[in-house]
Length: 300
Image: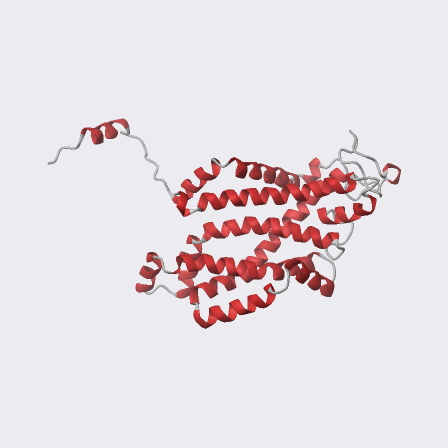
């Protein structure tokens, strides 16, 4: 029997009885993400916003709809941290509840966009040929119109409200998501495990949902994070233009729209909701950049 080298014997004695953790792509990506300070800052900001959204009833000192006309136009103070608006409503309470509305609606828009445009992109990337050509030309028709303009047109036709806004943002972001998901599937379509699965007779839909999508999930997660910020931005833009949600919904864009007429005299009505929008979108972009670096194969 061949004798082991001293280095191997030393390693076995040192690690005797220990469980050796096998490194996986997910663990390696997490280690790279944990070393990225910019991504961690973005994640921290998003955690704060998530706490605001989940615990808004306990964090907000006032009801976001409560109107106290005698307290109208107050500047930031110990009683009203962000001041009050022209109806005497506490702006801090409205901004805290705004996190609940903005994050929840943005998540719904992302889910709808992936179930429509994302699924079409996956089908186009897997089947290719005429199927790919038809779907992509259909997406090009929508992408020829600027996203915000398309969303404004849809909400103007359907009216204001939550379902109308979700439909408008879903349709306007569908082409981008479709092309990104198509690109992710094309990267794994010719992989060895896909060819092996085909050779043993794995069905097409089982191949897509069990093998290809899970292996392209890392890239798709980056798209999700980036799309969350884009949806919040578009949602705020629609509400600011008056074609989004209806008052007194405490959505950040709607709060910003309510305060724009008083900006010169009472700038706090605009600055605080604008800061919430800016910080949230910036946090999503910072986290998205960190995830892109973490999942980049060239860094493995």
